Length: 212
Image 1: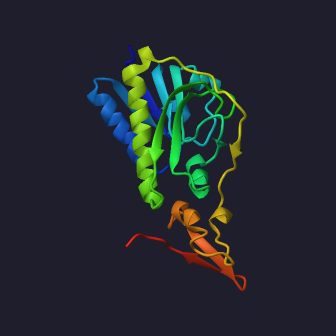
Image 2: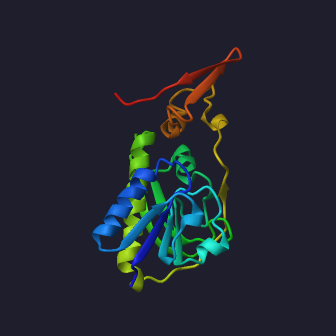
């Protein structure tokens, strides 16, 4: 039986409120659950969920728990790497597979324990699809806790593909293209942290998108 759970978020990620909600849900199940933001603070226990982590967790810290699980938003082995949900939205996908995988040394290469789907209608802006992503992270982690004794992990099969890390440059619009052509890019930008922008006559202009 799983009793001691750690949730690691190693940065000031947007997912922190959802990580705290997961902690509350786990405690309501009568489990010992704690949130930490530094991997050296991981406690010895049964499961460590890694949410939105940016640094590789050391073998020593992984050894503290029986299961170390990462939530990754792609149909692995396709879509390994950074910001998979953002990149897939830009590609025009409205069905996003969310995989719960074992954390190992290879990049997003661990066995798959569970998979769920996020369904989009094509209109969601950043805060909306982030909400769906956060809630799905909670759901898939809780499902593992409640059903793990009946689960069998499966190996990743097929060719791998990788997404690069997103930078501010990736939020730049092409002034020679229409807004309609670039709408999916506008859906993934963050108005505060990485806003959409354009350059005209070597001057940079920031653009803000909201729903009316």
